[in-house]
Length: 403
Image (cartoon, rainbow, N blue to C red; front, side, top):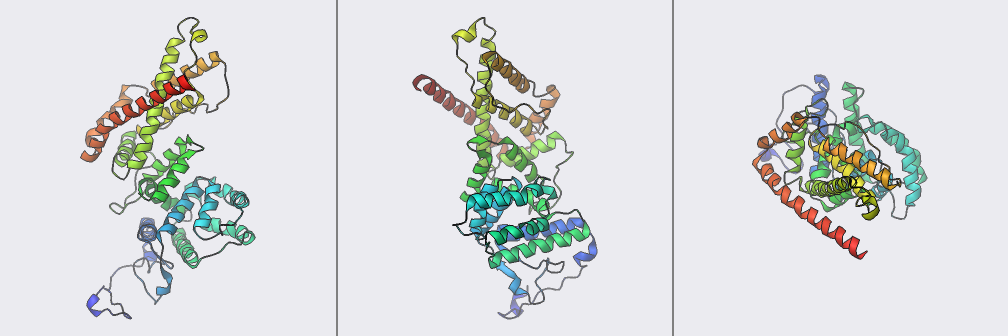
């Protein structure tokens, strides 16, 4: 922009020679445009409601009315809504609609949740990469009328912007989905943002009724690796990437300052798993002593079994390895003998996590490749783990003695 020629009523800008985006036929450039629009919307708080191929680079035709500001609380609410939609948390999504001003606080939440479940359940069951933004809006029409949704002016313009973006991309690739393309950015934003509102949403998402959901953490981390950033607009490895590359990406992310909140959660769950592993080992060893079950009560609880399974999943996740088998996650009551068999099986799964020593070597070899800051954080983890293990052991002792 030439400021010396620009006044309050006239803006003078540099003329850029080039081809229209619609003439390039390059899907990657479309993805860059979508990224820039989402970054502008959710990071900087401004939106352009008419992002056609020309306006992705400039504001033209006097359409300044299509520009607007997206306040911080609305940005966080929009991110939360996308997060809850993809993870099928429709109860939280109903609350998000109130935050975004689409529903009044007096709306019947249970009825709204039921309606949203009926509208979105089938659409999101196909996976985030197959969710059509246009279809979602079309399916929502009847529900909006029934519950007297309000459409704030900002919302209609933001929705227009997203719909136009998806329309442009579909012209290049009929299977393109704007939400699937931008969700990795949203996942990374939720995992790294210091906003108390987003951190609270992340914690509530990962801990449903107080129980840690490893599937959701794994999904968020996996999707975040696909995210394009302002430093490198290149495709991140997601499918078919070797375990060392995936592991390096995960460690590089969780060991940074921005990954501190997620790192705290992982360390906490890792400590729970190590604690459960110790109990399972003791119980398995004690079972080899004749009649020991008659004299010593069971050390393992159902919570410990869940923690042991989570530990196994965390080991796989942090090593960049896919699950080799699914195992029973039920919590049905069992006899002491059945419990012993269960503990032995769970312990065997964890101890035989890797097929051979060759599977562990990449974990060690990637450490020197990490940035100095990440290596420093890695050195502090053992002390944090020991501290949490001591706290858990002390709490369990007090509980067994006094409760």
